[in-house]
Length: 119
Image (cartoon, rainbow, N blue to C red; front, side, top):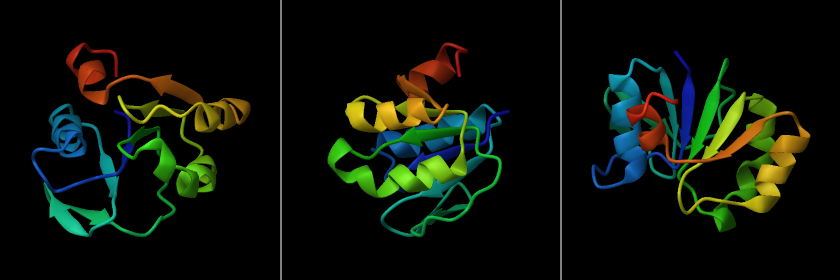
């Protein structure tokens, strides 16, 4: 299973980040959550501080491009295998930075990848 960090996590069931957390857990993936407001979701805490999570395989973004620069160094330091840019989060600058550092930048939808067995 792929340990996944959701950046832009939310406790609002209407948000795609919430749906992704729910679906990732249903598919038996371990998750870590980072968001702007601390809350509990599925027994997990949404952290508001950029923690040094270990063994992150995938980072999935639910933060728009204009708010991503503050995460560049953080995500690079985590050394994930890939970063998923969900619809609306595409960012050529960040994707290029990731690629230069040997991290796969993937423009895709986490929910679709899970649903089609491509996660």
